[in-house]
Image 1 (cartoon, rainbow over the protein chains, first blue to last red):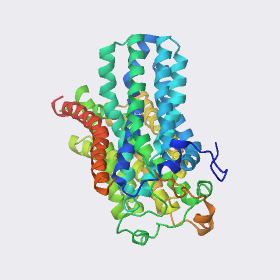
Image 2: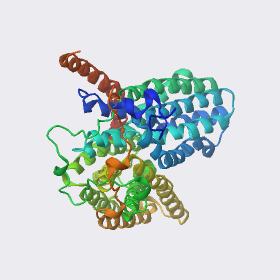
Image 3: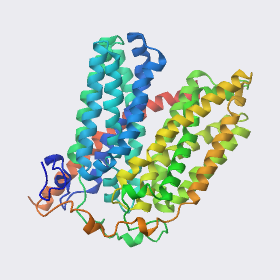
Amino acid sequence: MRDEVGQRPNFGFLDRSHTVAPPTWSRWLVPPAALSVHLAIGQAYAWSVFKPPLESALGLSGTLSALPFQLGIVMLGLSAAFGGTLVERNGPRWAMFVSAICFSSGFLLSALGVYTHQYWLVVLGYGFVGGIGLGIGYISPVSTLIKWFPDRPGMATGIAIMGFGGGALIASPWSAQMLSSFGTDTGGIATAFLVHGLVYAVFMSLGVFLIRVPPDGWTPPGWSPARTTVRRLVTTANVSARNAIRTPQFWCLWIVLCFNVTAGIGILEKAAPMIQDFFADTATPVAAGAAAGFVALLSLANMAGRIVWSSTSDLIGRKNIYRVYLGVGALLYLSIAHFGDNSKPIFIICALGILSFYGGGFATVPAYLKDLFGTYQVGAIHGRLLTAWSTAGVLGPLIVNAIADAQEHAGRTGPALYTTSLYIMIGLLAVGFVANELIRPVNSRFHEPAPAEEREPLVTKGDAS
Amino acid sequence: MTTADHGSRRTGLMVLAWLWVGLPLAYGVYELILKLTQLFVG
């Protein structure tokens, strides 16, 4: 199946040309479409709910039971990086459909794997196939949202990416409830996976049906691009994904994202033991239940930071908001290192700030990319940038766990277990701050010469549905 | 179909779409707040 110019396949209902919005379409229908995908795939962070039942039902080690999640995150990075161009070419409906099929099939394969005691099927299903769904789904609505909300790109992508944080909040109690209803033997886990696959397929289908791209040249009423280009970094030019990775701006932003995420994971990874260790020798030690409440509070800060800080970036500019994430983030880490064990409120407030900046960093980066590289292939560029997340996902836990273990072996206890990690995080945030300062407008030699001539038209007359 | 018909259909769709994603999210936040209380009573 090829379209009339023979340049690219035509996917019928799923094709970009069939998703061009009619004139009466409201752009406020696009965020729920994006959320239906992100709230679903955000389930990935609730995988830990399945770990203990899988370990006892199939006789697995902790390392083995974590494998589907780890492979899923690796596949998220790889499919976002390598599938980004396909997503741009084929459109958001195709991408959301592929994401829904892969993510749901992952659960169905896992159900079969658990039921037949073939654990490799769980790894293949949830990790490999489902992981492709994670990556394609994560980037699927980004460029569409930016095109619908050129006046508030930070807020628009913040809503979607907040959904990824919210997905775990929904899945964690829901999956736990399902396991307690169906049982934690292989039959119960398989049934839970089966229900997850079917429910997520239906839930994500809203996005597939609802997503629309704006007609070429569409702008919000009363808005003109000249209003936002008063900021020096904001461009009206376009840079392709292939050219973007040749610019220093892309790699500076890669460092910014990687180190901001590393710093956030540094807290997130060890939040519960950290607060207990910090106040173990004080008059008010923290019980396990209270530590779980602290982790929940951090999740809320992470989610709220995505929408609040990303929306704020529309007002104060992307470079300024990253100055806050990285600069104030470093100061908050410094406060924990110096005063954290003296005062529980100081410790909690600083940790909340760091986690809100962690979420904000994720949510603001698509809008930063749009400012620097234009809207042409911003989804594909975002996909490539997410390799920074994969790197940070390894780096953050590695630093904090390795140092805490080494300090423990050296006979240290309490806050001393984390002091070195905290200073390393401050150093990383400082490097990220410098990388952010080095970001300048992209050299015009990387710009697409004439977008209207270079790109084939996205829609011809009569295609709008 | 008139513009008014389109408008009312879109309003219904808008409400449905936001409820579709809003209700599960509200459930997740509610469960989180229940857990959160442990920080202050635990």
